[in-house]
Length: 247
Image (cartoon, rainbow, N blue to C red; front, side, top):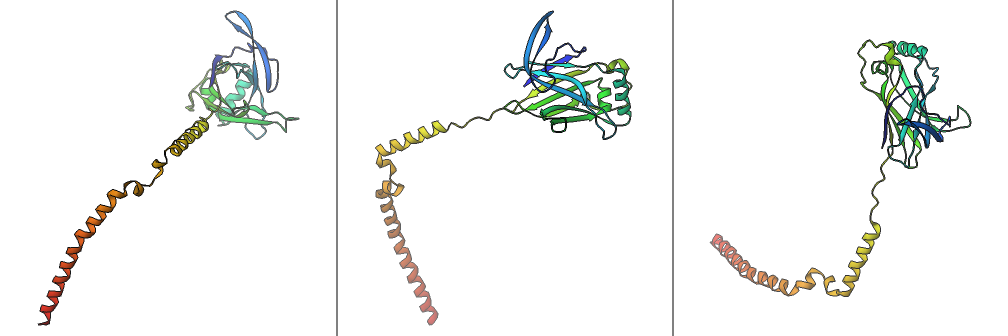
């Protein structure tokens, strides 16, 4: 899982691609510029009251699948108009939506997106602090996105306008862990060795009776012989009882 946390001060990173795909950016590290290349994911957001949802660019995520933990994020600062709109949506119990491109299309209508949302009020009261998780399959394709705010409750607290300028975001890129592969070859090899061992020692393949018949037969004969006198005595006693009843 790759994780990145940063405070967005405008666009610190220069993007090359405007859609999902490979891209490179110039990142400032310790006062020096360095080029970072990888998979770029555009992040869009929307906060509307009605069904006429309109997404605009919030920022972009650059992730290098070959380098664990290599994920960078650049985000725009909210304008005064956007901050006012966010407050209005929050006061009317609206929702704040985000989306990422999952599968490109020939036009806007044919493209497929992964979307998620939270109550707009929680976004405001968290001072734009959120956790975003981008879910990918083993091939590196986006299959979903999720967002939560920290904290996630709405209490009606007053928030200053300066606290709604910059996003404070933690990003996770999560891929499934490949399941353990069964050791089929080793099992077959062990089974073949056992069969070969049995072929060399056919005596081991005999049944339980074939191995121990010389012990089983005497025990059975002894039980049969010891039970015969008891059966005769019981017959005699029964006969005597019947005779007495006749007299």
